[in-house]
Image 1 (cartoon, rainbow, N blue to C red):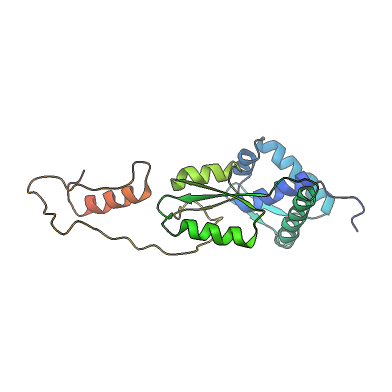
Image 2 (cartoon, rainbow, N blue to C red):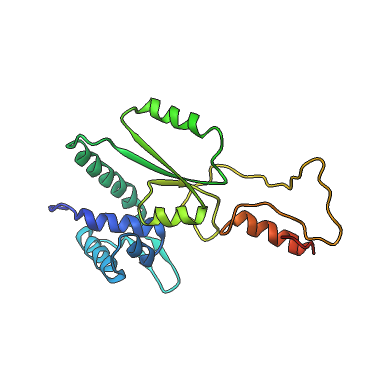
Length: 207
């Protein structure tokens, strides 16, 4: 039986490790050291009397107890944040990062629908490259992001599949002995890299 309250900072640290799958990334996100993150986790595990994270030189994963505790830990932090917010008159803010490849003309309508559900919610939209938005998300500057899939990330949720194609004006004709002019977003741009790779594989010069 647990007779003392849990350290919420340690609980938040555990959740970050679980979500990022890395002690190093959790430390960077929380702007602290890896040793501090490890110490907070050990204290929480000692407090609960069980191992939450199984860590080896090759991987970090939740134990069976960690999987069970994670849902409750998230709910605990959520209720804690709501309790603090209820004592202030400040409007809640939702900051969303949207990749410039995803943002479209329907965005204002979607924001209006969100605002209609909760008029007191302050919605802030930031549009940028997927890589930059993910960095901001890891620094906790954004609540959530909608970006193109990055193979190195496994902490997101697939919401749609994109289709890519080659497009040109109807009267455009390629010029002999000249590189193919390709219009893309400026670097860094994952679509530009993908297009360049495909053209290079096909042996087609481009610029």
